[in-house]
Length: 334
Image 1 (cartoon, rainbow, N blue to C red):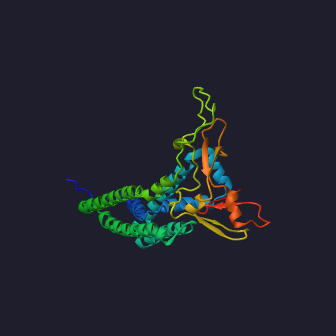
Image 2 (image 1 turned 60 degrees about the vertical axis):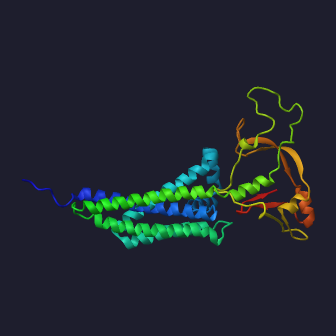
Image 3 (image 1 turned 90 degrees about the horizontal axis):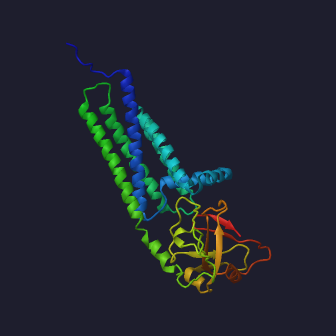
């Protein structure tokens, strides 16, 4: 009677080791990202490792690459970028997992290096505070712990013998638990992110009602399939310059006027409104809009005249342009 071999064929053992390493690396990395999302949601922050790395990739890339992405992908460029970051991260994590199952110290060190890149990318964001670093730091620590634990289970479960079915089932169960924890953490983080309602409520409380705004007489021609004179707010095109927009409440917002002025001026939202609002019908179109495209809209805009704000600061003779800077560092010249 022939007995079953007690050792796996070399090729099968190599394949099993490779798959095991991939599972170790991807599962631990997924848990780190999920926990980072959870911490970000709990703290009410938008800075997560994926967003930070994606924005660093955009900011440090040549201008032609951004233009090419917009030309090819349109408004889907941000989603494609995030997907690309996740794919690259998964591939690197898989490689790190394989390395860890073979040389645990080197693998953990490589994982720490990848996490350090995410932390640095978060820190280099223009609007970053120390609090914004916590999601990346906690996510990296949790990922390293999971990587080491899964690698240890893998070393016991997938040795050269085939008689350790119990240990293998334990490894698979541990990997499944890690993946489930990653999914739960991510979902909880996204749910907590929806609780950033204080910002949305603040914005809604200061939004000007358009009930009293009426299109000019005869502006709507009544032609079937023609665009209306007024573009509803819900469908007005929006192009974000960042993967995550700043979360700023009206109560915390400040306008600082400085540079080539006689005196620096800082206004809060209420002080700005005291200068008086004007309303004007304005048509906006994106520079990337094609003829007949949807990246255009017409609406009644209300706001304070820039000239009135500049008059408070007193312009110096050499001043010839206004540079507006947002909370996350994006600038526009006028």
